[in-house]
Amino acid sequence: MSKTTLTTTPFAADAADERLIRSESITAPLLQALRRLVLERDRTAVRTILALLLQALRRSVATTVTRLRSGELGVVPVVVGLIVICAVFYSQEPVFLSSRSLVSLTQFAAPIGFISLGIVLVLLLGEIDLSVGSVSGFTSAILAVLLVDHGQSLVVAMAAAIGAGAVIGLIYASLHQFVGVPSFVFSLAGLLAFQGALLYTLGDQGTINLPQDSGLRTFARDKFLTDTQAYALVGLAVALYVGSRVLTIRRRRAAGLTPPPLAGVLVRAVLMLAGLGYACYYLGIGRGVGYLFASFVITTALLDLALRRTSWGRHVFAVGGNEEAARRAGINVRFVYLSVFTLCSTFAAIGGLMVAGQLTSVSQSSGTTDTNLTAIAAAVIGGTSLFGGRGSAYAALLGMLVLQSISTGLNLLSVESSVRFMITGGVLLLAVAIDSVSRRARSSSGRG
Image (cartoon, rainbow, N blue to C red; front, side):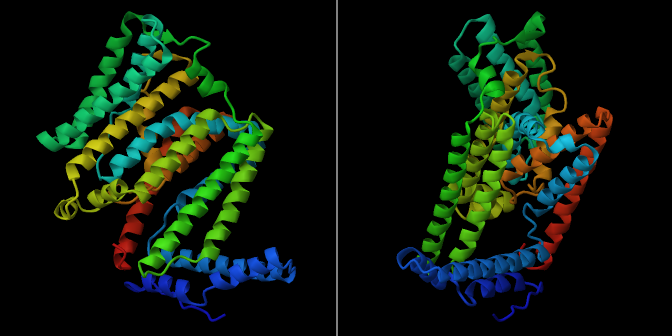
């Protein structure tokens, strides 16, 4: 196999990617080998298939190296960071990577993770929302008052709380688009106003305990997937990934563009199946995958799908990259802002409800501690750019896993919370620095 020279001169990264895809296509030989194995029972085809998959893996690595050199870091820094964090804490306290510890870690990461999904959306526009913590606390208070004090059903109470969050986001977007108030200003005002609204809603009670038999409490604390359900979700996720990539290949071929190699898709699918399958097996040694964490992961995947595969998602990236250019291209910029801020506050409300379900209570401190900073830090640490136009829904998931890993590890080592805040601040600063450096690298390599 001929060697491909990798270079990082301007515009050469894209050209290198193209050469790696075009040269010595292995898709047809792979399909022929699979046909021989299935139809002719030719065992020698196994060796051919393995060799072709190894070749595809090498090309994928070469392409990844090229993109990294040109500043397209993606999730690599946060994944490497997560591995380092796990290795350090495991060396100090092996219980850190026990199944029970990891189950607890995922459960506590999910509620704030929902809030961080909304932060990812506003950051993609180059905006910010500093009030998500206060909104989550206020909406959880609405739930508690309706459920406990007024005897409403859980469905009605949750609908009212989530609806209140959506209305708040709609008001924010209206202030931005129709009045011209910067997001920093109206969200800072919201942070203070909804802290007051939380206190007013709770009144003299201070704390409202949710019923022990509440479906929300059961969902957030006690419900876990069976092994069969967990493996079925893994299989479905891998099948959807392969299906989406095959659809992309067909569309690019129909448009006369070079498609990504099918062998590379299959290699990633196999790795995904093995990794997720083992994760489910290991978590199953403890209590398994919680309904709460599973719902967070599914929501993240659906949001990522909406961002990457729908016109709305492409418009969000376009507006975040260059609002004026997007407006001149005919994109409804006002609708993009309205939808994003509405979703942000809606996710904040959902996260607040999940926190209330976990704690089985709502108090005057709900959403007012480090909720804001944790949600924002998770989005940035996960790889969402503060400059707008770059990021992924998976940034919220990965960022929360990093922050919760730090919190869990330090708790196991009996380190004071003050140290946790300082370490979190350092990780956040490092993430922003990496984003700034990669942004300059993309500019110098012609990737913008």
